[in-house]
Length: 132
Ligand code: NI
Image 1 (cartoon, helix red, strand yellow):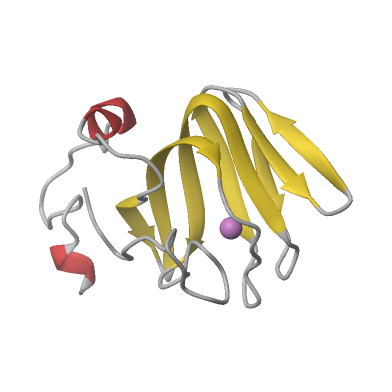
Image 2: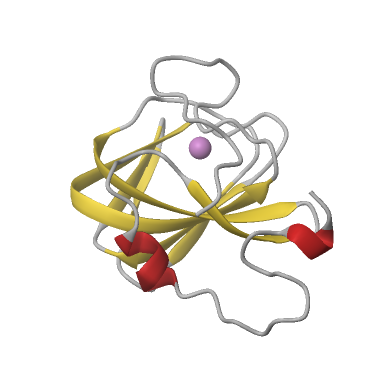
């Protein structure tokens, strides 16, 4: 994909990417959708609820920004609780497991091509590079 044919930034137009409008198009959970790219990084939005699987990303940090709801990210030695408007950067190689008691709307920022379940594909692995 070249810079001029990114779905949400067609060349020659100046249209904002409205996150609420994009979120309203999502009717499933744990399936991140790309809304924008910056250099090699992707901005993704996702709805989650319940428990995920333990995993880590050996090659990159992973940024979580809570757009709505209450997110807990568990680590082997603790946890971080994030509310709307809060963010956290999970360090590269650190095992983590997101958890949401009720639905949470998130933005994720990570390099293009990162697998949501970390090193190994499993039943929770989402398709990558799906734009919305
Ligand atoms: Ni992760």
